[in-house]
Length: 119
Image 1: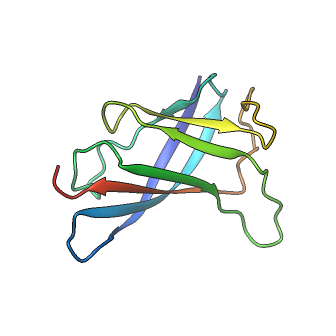
Image 2: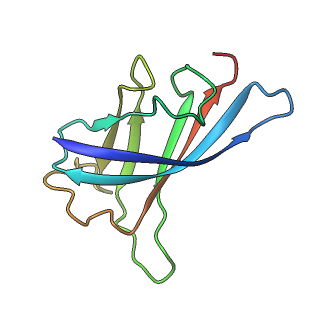
């Protein structure tokens, strides 16, 4: 079973009505990838003034200039709470990532998550 450690760097309001906000952060992977994705737990952070499930999560490689990205695609599958969403990882050919994470994503993976301001 794999583990995804979440670090939240900041939050930003998204619109002038303050209906939602965005959380930015990074992900660190360890262990072995679980078929259909590992849990991406976004609960329990003081920077999240909402209890709602994320409206949308975008995960992307954020590697330094001069470093080749892996090309994997990240798909967030929402759960019923902030704590039980899953992150599935696919190659450009559409096959799921498999095996140990090792240093595959050590170059850097970042995310943005949109939350409702009213929950």
